[in-house]
Length: 429
Image (cartoon, rainbow, N blue to C red; front, side, top):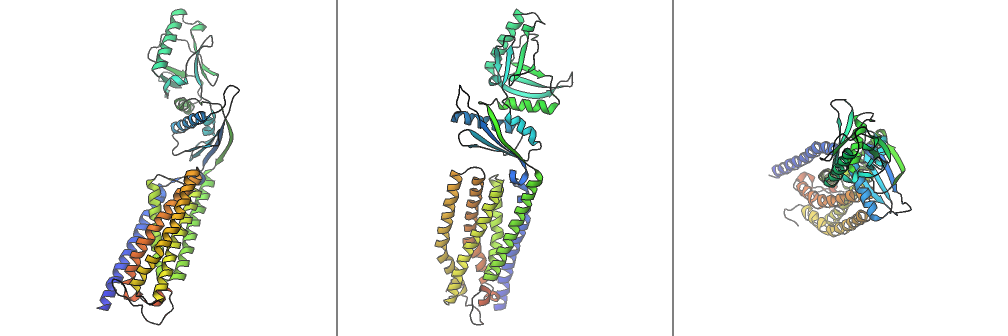
């Protein structure tokens, strides 16, 4: 009977461990591949833009909020996913664009004022970018050349209709005064003649585009809007994909080496419970990756550092539990009773240490920005995941182990004792 019960308990334990390994190997790679990578791992461009005060106007908080909104609109129009755009101080913006295919073009577009103006021959501004509703780049079917079609909003449509009607009524076709100049950042793009009044609020910019991409980028700038204040790019650096790939490879190696060292430490120090801790860490890693994937988080080097730190804390929880388990065994308790008592006595300490770590993560998140917030999020998630796996999964696996008579010797738990099996009674001491 004892042999049959031992075989049954062993079979149940093996099935659970195989299921954990299958889940780990099956889900780990897809989750890693689905993870979005930050600038330091994927490459891209880092830009620091400083808003410039003028003699007539000092940069305000409202200007910075508008500048941040316009920059985000521009980046969105360029099709760059998950940019990092954040304020630094009172007059600076940090912009990080991961994975951009043409960093130099991105820098050029970010720095443009993009002030669009339609002027009559006497210098009067008829409509501007503020009156714009939409801008699209197209290929003219007749000339085959790229051009930009513009659509004004209701107010802009009325103003444009009034001025074009006035020009048609007052000047003959071909008269220079019948033209409307289209300017971008005070530079004349084109100066077309008004053939007829334009009541539908549409216009086009043609000529001068080297290719369709140039027209498309300009249209994106116009859709994003003009910068509310002058801006100077005081810093920009390009992180190449090679450097990003190297950082990613080193990060993966660091994780692998750290996990191997932790596994060896737990095996040497705690024997069979160390094996249980390793399987718990597999589920811990899956919980972290799944949570980051669900949150659509962007993985950065500081974020990886936060995860590695939380791995150490996950091991700390297991160490607290296993040391209490050893003490209970030395005091003569049965294996199941020692397991339950070990968890019960270590629980308060684990809650205290994890609570302090969660508090630190919250402070970093709310007072920090950018990479610091990423570190805080990953640290907080890691602490929560480690707490869950330590007090639930580790306990469940140890109970499965306790059901196998073959694994009830003192030596399996690192406890020096007589050459006999630890007493085991279902349900406690």
